[in-house]
Length: 374
Image 1: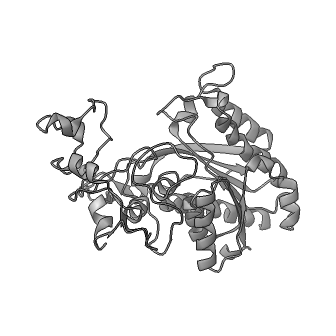
Image 2: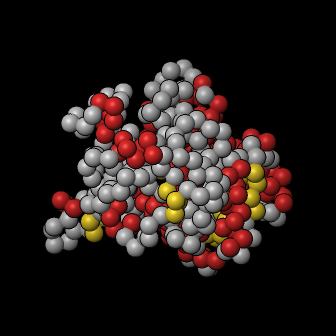
């Protein structure tokens, strides 16, 4: 029977490696990861070097990567790979923005998971996406058509897909982050999603209840004051890059509040914010999980007049402290080509969620081996 060191995985759309951390912690060996963003690739290479891993990073457009050639390079045959995992770009399915679905070329990248699965025939697939995928219209404007197309294509490859919307806070991440996860294994399918380990505080008082949600205060405890901007990015990414203008604007916003609702503050401080701007100039609370970390904004510290640092974002996302980020730390939101450190974290899968799911996949694979050898 296989031991945990022999399970092999390939990671697509790897980003900063959040999913890969959890997958590796559960017992998989990541053979190769594919990512187009140069800063994320720098992050991956640095952590691979530090861990003495043999993982190969392929930097570039996944559409130009031949899965057949990669399989040959890795010395694998169809069916040898245990897990193909990835979180394709989600902007075209997101509930925020234009939601271009398949009319946005980023939406088509979802089906790269199928293209690779067709060649490698892995024993299992793990796919992460925003909830909007479930209702995204296809090219005929059929609601939910994209998701149905994905499921149909996986079933045509003899997989049995299962899916669930998972809140990261239910698996020990101090963040209210809902994403849909699709797990597909070859027939017969015995996969079961792992039960949550955490629950909201108000629901945690029965005799057999789960552990209460982890809070922002729980994970920020123990961090020293961040470094100030001095032209040098510290290795731990614990850097305060808050512009003075934003320090002024967040001043007076209570813990857990947002600036737009503070109607008692001067108009020049609130400026053009509206009632809908509930996440802009948002200060987190130490007594609750964070809102979903997003790419467009940086949340503020619960009690200090500054942005959260990338290291604080990493703790809120469930990254280990020995993991490092590479690339710039930008002080303001905006559209830029390459990922800065805050967005590398916000774009990624929380490692504890990936670990819980991939551990359940390994359990399923072991059970299949036992059935086969019986």
